Length: 115
Image (cartoon, rainbow, N blue to C red; front, side, top):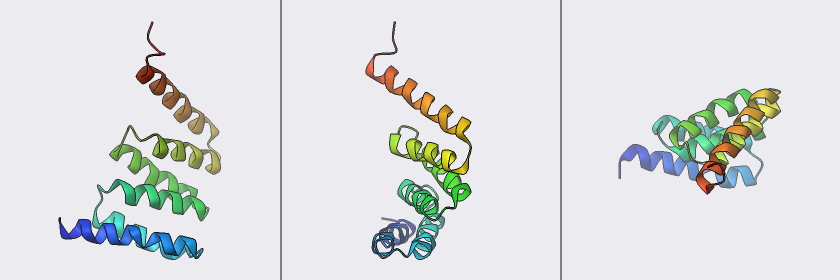
């Protein structure tokens, strides 16, 4: 295991007790360190996006969740949370667009979208 992944994993794990104690800004600091240590670490970006949204930092949440979606394009949770962040930011059109695309992909994968 690479050292940077160990650091990112530890920093990511530290978020749980901090969020449980409602220390959101501390959790964001640790998650930011995780994302910086390992920019390709999906969990760090996903969790940082959620924490930023919880703190009301919707622009930052959108940025982190967009990165998470790019890292794992098939992750429905990341995409759903990205849509929710756009809605909270006030960009309902983008939120709806993300939902429509996800529904279309879901139907195609289940065979419902085929003629």
